[in-house]
Image (cartoon, rainbow over all chains, first blue to last red; front, top):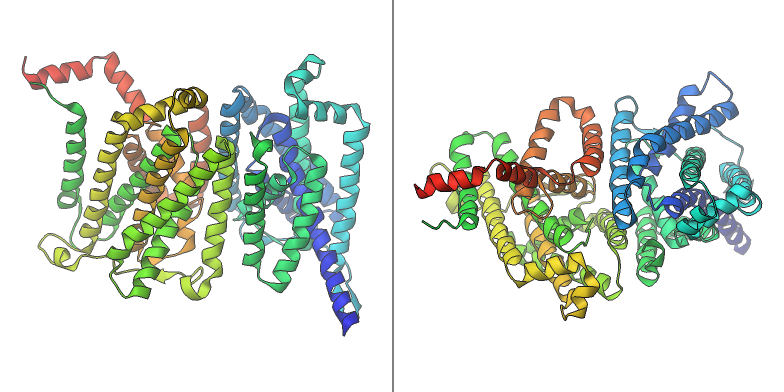
Length: 287
Length: 333
């Protein structure tokens, strides 16, 4: 009896950690862009769904792994196109005005893209990757959770190496800390911003695919995905990359256990409540 | 003859609102009255946002949730107490107002910037809507509650009037009341204080303006007004559901209305509400494109047309001396 409980909790913990890594990746997508240029990307959820849809469209034509890779590349390319045309206009303004403009322009972008998607696609979509699950003492360890953990770890570790070991990563962290200082050091902020935005969209696309593997995403409700990403970024401290990863894992585990022992509503209300408390206690990151 | 233009314009708006039903409403039709009621409701919500966001830089992104608070509190409390919802409406509005005042208080106390307030209220928006969804036994969850009791039977029984027209007139009366309050605020010491706080909060504080007090007052007034029209929004459709108060249905739309009409203008919210409701109506046949159009509209407005229709028309009128000329015409000189 006790053993079954322990295994049950362990299985839940694995699901929670898998959800946590996924959250961490979404939060990272928000944090990178906000830290770099002060834009709170309210359209991140749409890009996640775009990646899932590309895989869905390519399924049957090419192998799944190739479809996923193509989805990430194509979504990132779309993101780059939007950065070069739309966000350039946002970067013309400074300070608080830019923050506000960023919120409204990406919100408009989210609505416009969601509307465009809704013309052709609707309902829940997922990525059909069905690894076997293990049964231990009457409890299932979901194979999907393990796949998500594995893939997320690879990417998060890659991110860690990128930001700690490469010159570009160092430049990114410099801009996040001090934009003027970075410019004085000869960093091309415009190009870096475009690069980091594209990277964040690629991360969002990857996060979208993980989401599609572990559950399904409603094409008509991308804002739900965006809000999770923002909550994680808030709790993680918005400009700290490590903080976001920790926040993602903690929130993922909390939300999984609350869903299992309470309800989905309880889980999402708790996430918002935590975000509100963090905002009130430590609002500095957004000021 | 010295004409008080400002007050005359409010009277004019009141008259226009008054004659809309005899001209446009046809007996038995529900579509047209609902459309005008929607315009008036949205104008009130936008005016509220204008007060709190336009004048005190507190970007409240939970108007939908506050309207829902007003709506659900009114209906559920009336059911619980066994009284008419007309009695519980002001109580619900007061609760909504207290939530707004509390947010403003905390924001002022903690020195939260406009971005933090917007994200904070956005999180509250989703929490409140989820909360309504989760208490299915009381709120009916996503299926909602039927709302038909916000009527005034003796009035509706009068000739030329029906329930639709009475609801419209109720909303229109609230709109005029809020316009008068707005006019009073802007032209009084409150308006001065709001302007100072907006331009330089520290400077205002340093010469003795109680910044927190004015922000709380603005927060209270705005959310009180929003809470008051929440139940009317439900009465209009006959149902109280969480979706009709969602971020996309209310907050995004009134932001567009406010910017189109003109931030920090008295009539901008009305102009914006009329224009956006009409655009929405035109797009009805192209339902699928509606979301896309609003998204593009939001982007273009914020990038290129942040001044809005009312300030634009005013500056054009000034350029061609239209105001002076018509003033001369009226005074007969």
